[in-house]
Length: 311
Image (cartoon, rainbow, N blue to C red):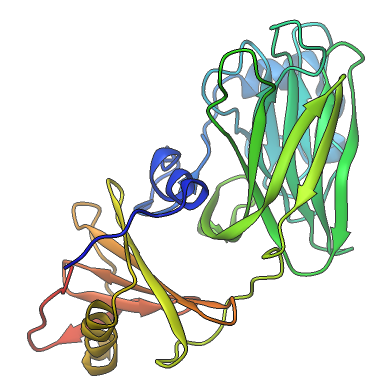
C-alpha cells in the first residue's frame, strides 16, 4: 500500500501525545492526561474548604500533565470543577465548571521571560454548552478567556515545535471526548481535525480559528470518502489512494459481529479507523486484534469468522 504522511497537527494528536492514564482501562489510541491521587491528601489538608465544592478524598484527582514545573491541577469527579495550585498561591479556580470541564492544559510563557509559569487550557461546560481556550496568569494568579464559543465542540491543545527565537505556537484540535468510567477527571480524546492555533504576542494569547472548525462526527458511510487514517498507539498512516480506501471499506462492510459482554484485553492492539469525507465529516470505527469491533459511541462486539486487516 502507498503510505501518505499525515498532517502535522493530526500526527501530533494521534501519536506524540498519546499516553496511558493510571486510572485503569485500555487507553489505546486516546490522547490522555495523568489521572491519579498524588498530592490530593495534602491539598485537602491545606484547603479543607474545597470539600464544599466537590473535592474530597474520593472525588479529587491530580490531573497535572507531565513536566509542569511545580504547578499542579486537581479536578473533581463530582462536578468537574478544576483548581490550579501554583507555588506562589494556595489555589485558584479555573474558569469552567460542569462536565467535562477542563479538557487539556499546556504550559506557556506570557511574558516571554522563559519561566513558563502560565497555563493555557481548553474547556467545555456541559450546562451552558460553552467551549473555548483560557489562560492562567502565573504572576497575577487568575485566569481569563482567550477564545470562547457555544455549541457541541471539544478542543485540545498541543505545543508545536518552534524555531529558535520564534514565539511559541500551540495547535488547537477539535476532538471527541470520552469519560472513562464516567469520570470527568479521567478523559480520553481523539482528534477530528485542526481547529486553529494560539499564538502569544506581547503577553497576550490570540486564537486564530481554522476553516475546518465545524467538523462533525457522522455515521459510517462508504461514499464521498476523501481519506482514511488508521492509528495505533505507536504509529499513524493515512490512505488516499482509491485502491487502499476500497480495501479498508470492504473490510468494514463485510465484517460480521455478535453481541458480547467481553471487552478487549489490555494486551491487544486497537486500530482506530477514521474515515474522512469530502464534506469535512468524519466517522470512526475500531478493530482490536483480539477479535473485537465497534463503531464510535457503540459497544465492543465479537467478530464472527475470519478476517484480514488490510493495513
